[in-house]
Image (spheres, helix red, strand yellow):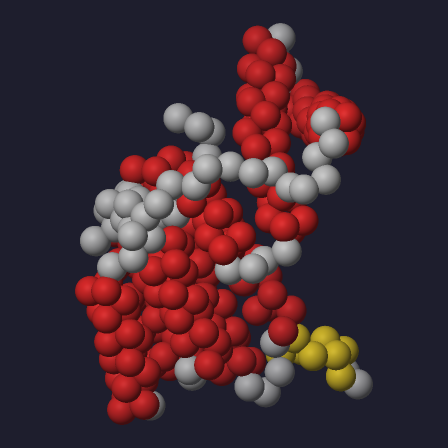
Length: 245
């Protein structure tokens, strides 16, 4: 296990050997459809398609996909509540169209999040970063993303080690001690991340790394059948949204 369930799911996915560009086209099309089409039925159809593709053909574990959706869901729910509250002469209250506004926001956001998670749970970063380079994304942006991705695992390992040490010393035996240990854990991880990033910057500068990090990408051929099915599926979602609206 790498420490990231989404990353583990991407490496074990049945779509692991598919070309990243094919999956980007599918997931990007679903995101655009989730934003452009009305929440009902467009966003609902996009969300259903994304979830079915993830747990079906891509073989992403249902539990992993569900756990990955929790954090976007919490963020969206918080945003929906703040979006439907109005401050009037009589104080705060619900907007007249609170239900419709909240439903539209939830539909668009959750459908788009499901489409993005479909890409995240089927495409490892080692495949996505070379695809970004081929797409003419600035090299500095790709290099920063690669460094942050690699540093993330170091920080997760450090956090796991520190927490195990705290638990062994009864640092989480009570609520008060848990609060104190959590604060110390956050401070230690922040300090280590800053130190690690500084040492990495000095190491790259000492090696004259002014042309980017070059790696040998794995060649994954594109599938015409997958592309055709993607275009047909997106067209079907749009058509169904127009008919059912």
